[in-house]
Amino acid sequence: MNMNPEPFFLGGREVAPGRTPFVIAEIGVNHDGNIERARELVHAARAAGADAAKFQMFDASMLMSLDSVLAVYQRERGARDPRELLQGLQLDPYELGRLAEECVSIGIVPMVTVFSLPLVQVAREQGWHAFKMASPDLVNLPLLRAIAELGKPMVVSTGAAMREEVVQAANWLADVRQLAFLQCTSSYPTPDDHAAIGGMHEIRLLARRIVGYSDHTAVVDSGGIAVAAGACILEKHLTYDRAAPGPDHAASLDPAQFGAYVALARRAARMIGAHTKELQEVERDVRRVSRQSLVATHDLVAGSVLAQTDLCVKRPGTGISASLLHSIVGRTLARAVAADRVLMAEDLA
Image 1 (cartoon, rainbow, N blue to C red):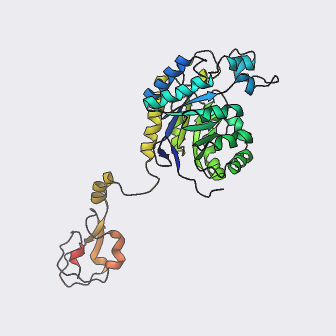
Image 2 (cartoon, rainbow, N blue to C red):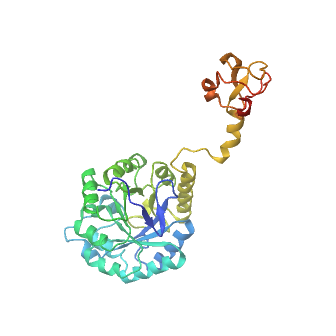
Image 3 (spheres, rainbow, N blue to C red):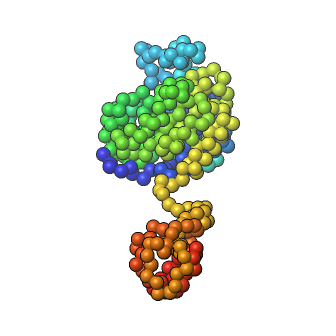
């Protein structure tokens, strides 16, 4: 396993700590199985400032066995049969390929989650720039490897996973250069006290990869919080109407809210800045006037050998730094210095 993360790129842009976060609009199944609505959501994602639009490529009969069951949140939103639910939400894989082209045409990165092995070959022939693994497939070795072999950037979500499963997936994908992991809580929507944004820190240590946050909260400020905690990638569901029937609308943001989410996340990134401690240009004036220098306690004549009692420390910081007091004691003055005047380097012999 890599001791340090490989450089990671999405849409031709390096995704890294200290950079602007890469924001994925998860359209998922919020198009309700309607291709025109899906296209509208692509444009809404672009207008809201997202960097990528992501879809889900699945076939209900491939994905769901006859023993499949609904999640509680799906039953609470009126679903009765898991296959029937997904059949009403799926788009034809070839229609999805046209959506990838639509993304490229308007300048947003097309991403897709493929849920079944037979569909990987379909996705291979389309214009997807990156692939996202759904949380349940963190342990799906055949699908993980099939997507890895496409040679595109790969983002892996870790919702409902144990740390051992994260390590296992990282080991399976150790040869994949363009790889990132997302912390995620698989609850729709996720309450604040279960957002677990801080889980990114352990994932970074376990996987040694770039990390981000797949966000299922229903609020607009969680992205900024995640960025402050170290997220380089954000994924958030986008919908046309949070009150619409369907499994994911309630855990999504509408276009206006999504725009606010992106703005807050990017503001957080600007406020955090580079992950270094440096003197900034905006600080120079205050540094000059508020730092302290060595100052003559009384009139000093040329040729004097400086004693500690000859010097005190006062503002401004334009002369010899107070930090040099002990090295200046014992030096000889080249010229006179009046009382209460800053000692300058040229005053010394």
